[in-house]
Length: 492
Ligand code: GLN
Image 1 (cartoon, rainbow, N blue to C red):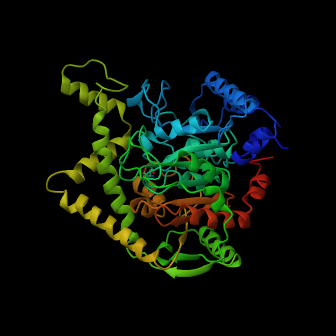
Image 2: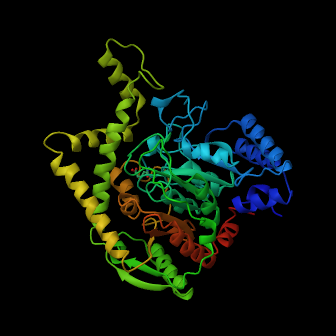
Image 3: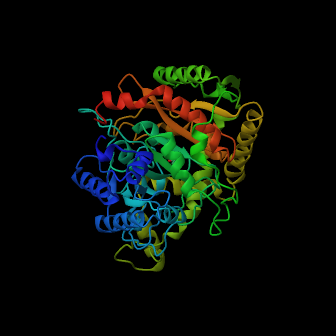
């Protein structure tokens, strides 16, 4: 057996049940690695005592033959999930010292299935960003950076993706509003799965854009992502948008044949800014699926070009409403030297929010304001409906859609941070599935010219995570990304 920290979720579950090691040993290994790391800055907080205590309890359950599905598996959690009595800041100054009195449903489910929360990971402030550079906790380094070239891990779940890639946890949780699980997964060479809107409860997750936000796993393999998603899914009376549907056995889905499956290739994703490397990987993916017996067809999603502009109206609009609650009274940070109540609000918000968050609030309030509402917000909602219809029509002919996850590989820190539009263009392939509430997965499929990871994305029908998992498993086997990780020194 290799190093303990090299083991993914499934291997950890097997190793623990064979008694090859204990949960305590495993958790200690990760804690040491996290505390030793002075380069990546992926974690914002760890609580070694609590994690080790939970590991001991897990080992004890195992001795008593009371094993739970994720018993002893060390999982990192994006700092957007409220964790009871544990500080949660969403990487924002305005939530400084905020200690929730409740546990998010998703992290509660993780704990109830025996998972060990190994720490909280950095993110773009309030999940707004594609590079982790808007975090109040400083930038996170992509573990694939080499020499002088310091790469972003992607965002907003950049800390989680970097932590999984660097083997600082067995798997992690992220959230995805317009691509924040899939894009960082693609940049860091790991698997990211955004479930169908409503598959997981949003209760206790700090809200960005409530009609889009979804929690999901970031993991080293498709099977690991399936194992985690199965545990965190399900109806929750605390979130009226969670859906009362039976959660299927997602691990079984990973080994289903794709011979009967039809995969759609949307012409509209052939945009001009697509790098040749990405184009080639996409073609390669099509060939892999053909060899596995899948039927490949061309499809059209005609409203795709309007998805990004619509997203950057809907998401900021919802954000401006959700973020109204941070006023210096109820949560976290409060500004000093206040002269009046209005002064308290404005000083707290001016000092507490970062530049990108302020930009979103300004855009959001503008598109919702009287006189502009119809021209922007209402129009964007109509576009959203058109995008849903495009997918509905496409899914009459195919079972899953294959696209690249991003138009190019990871970029350098600072390269795009002064040009918001260029930054937003990162999300061009991920936002359509978000607007339509569809499940989508990104899996590492190859490297670009500069030896940076590239992901392929599969989009599925609502609540059909099973199909994208089965197709993703085939791509994963063909890509053999692990050999590239070894070759590039990411794992030994
Ligand atoms: N990058 C996108 C944004 O900044 C998506 C973020 C997300 O999915 N949370 O809005």
